[in-house]
Image (tube, rainbow, N blue to C red; front, side, top):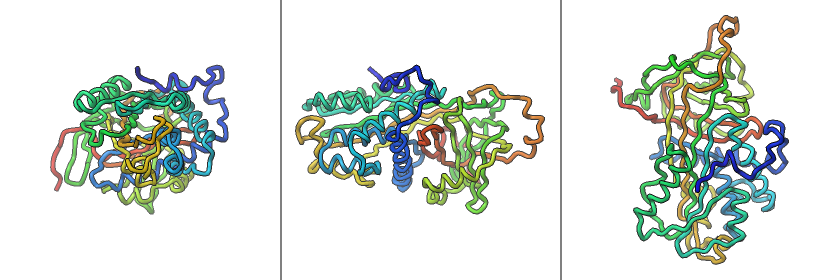
Length: 405
């Protein structure tokens, strides 16, 4: 069985349109904490020299931390809340706040996007999940539970990857090629997200262009082009551009942050935090922007265990210290892997645009946003102010074009 969270999560009353429902203080607080987590985790991963493309859903990672705190005791549970900056909040506040937040942002019908999410906790074949944990983890986080036997590792891996592919309608064919530690519990998030632009790109305004991974390595990508009115800021001091493109129904948007020239993203990433994002967005002005953006088909799988450990989740991932006894009734379990896998696609699809706009004065002299080199992106929810995804595109799919001098 697979889960499509956008259709089924928690069954909030359909009678009240999503945009009209007022969020509780709990959900608003957890949205804010998940945004802090977004930047903390992104920075932890960006330091990994072997990392290229990054794709994270902070609200889904927050739900995984909620799951650990739900199944843990003492320090194991409190550390999970601390990584979420929620250590001073009581358990019920955290679980119900995250549940409401997830239900709100994953309402793909209201937001007119495609977002499929599967969450599953795999335990060793010897484990027995407690009734309370199964009930509450499904209630708050829509987690499935499954036992897995790694004696036949090939079969176990096939089972995990087939579940992820089924969950995402084949968009995410593989979560992992291997699992080194096979004696613990595995958290697996499998997702597929596809935005629907508020104003579509014309399907004929697409051609093959070069994307400079580095100054000496270029790949060919299909590049989409359109000119429209967008929130835009040119940060001349930091030599970068920020543009915001609303998604259909305008309940969420994509924000792109790109250095003016091809360079490693490290310099821009050092600037990136919650306060800086607020500064950039507060300085945005709606104006004419000529956007060239690669069509993207991105599949990224991260094992977050090490990175969450670096943020303070040390006990749950330590076989000798973990106390996850609320999961199994025994202190015999630790978190060996946290697989966070997502497929992201964007293309020309979106709402019809108003062609009459192109004769207006405000459309003259557009700013150019030409995304032919690595950039950072975010998918931001307008109502909750939470970050649904944060990532970077360093190496898109494409064949090598040429070596630059």
